View 1 (cartoon, helix red, strand yellow):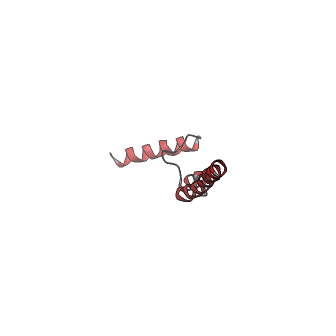
View 2: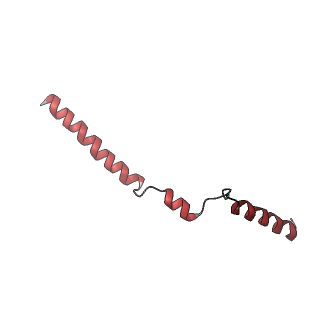
View 3: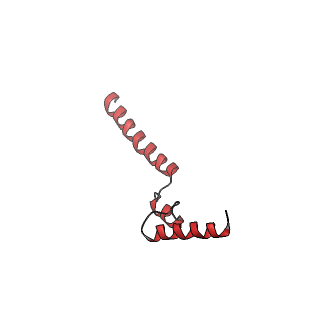
Amino acid sequence: PTQFELRQKNAQFANAVRSGKKAAKPSRQEQLSKRSPISLWALGIILFVVVGGVLFELVRLIFL
């Protein structure tokens, strides 16, 4: 591609973004805003403790 073609494509892309169409890749800020504040492994540990505690209590109530 020539330099003229590159500039033309860049201008088309910039106009599309300015007109409200989504960019090809979301910005870093958008990606961070969509992330959960708690990591997956921490969520897994919390679920393990809660579900394990419920199961332990059910076993205790039924068999003891």
